[in-house]
Length: 124
Image 1 (cartoon, rainbow, N blue to C red):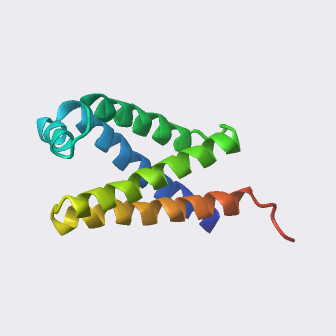
Image 2 (tube, rainbow, N blue to C red):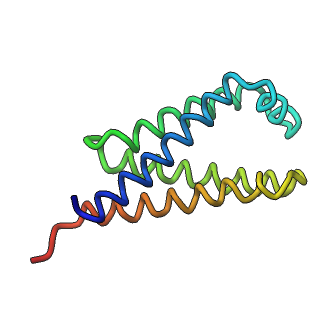
């Protein structure tokens, strides 16, 4: 297997599993629900964001989807992760809560860059 393919699928798989886990917590964890309320969000936003994470993760994992759809999924996740980090910092949450979204943003960027590399034609 080519290096680009291995790096792409490793980062994409890791990222997608994390987003699916996060989405499941949005639906099942009373603590997550309480945090959304504490930050001033309506409960419908938690549910909407949970479904968006599920759909976005599946979009990244399904190879045959349109490139534009994948671009939007990458952009949506990027905005979500940067916003989460800023919100946790503004709310005075522990450093882990501020840094964790940025770590996953880094994994997302690596996935995106290697996805783009895989799309380029091979140079002989």
